[in-house]
Image 1: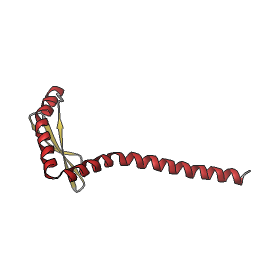
Image 2 (image 1 turned 90 degrees about the vertical axis):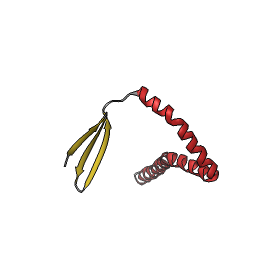
Image 3 (image 1 turned 90 degrees about the horizontal axis):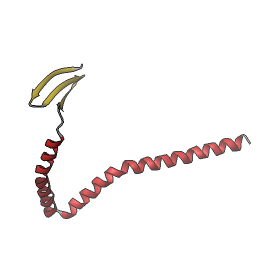
Image 4 (image 1 turned 180 degrees about the vertical axis):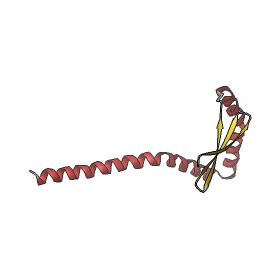
Length: 104
């Protein structure tokens, strides 16, 4: 059930895991080079900029809606956790006040 096989290319290792009926393949980089990562980011930035401008040129309204939805998806969990916490505090306060009224 554990690790089945391992393949290696350059500095990336692909490990295959068999868990029941499922097979998982994981890629792991053995070394992290921040300078190389920065150069890859800098070289990919013009392509990313071009992609965003092309999408904006085709459908600016849909692109803006997509960005707003992605931002909302990012903060939705925090808002739901805050509201759930407030609701539980109100329920807790209600039960404590009922206990105090019953035993006073």
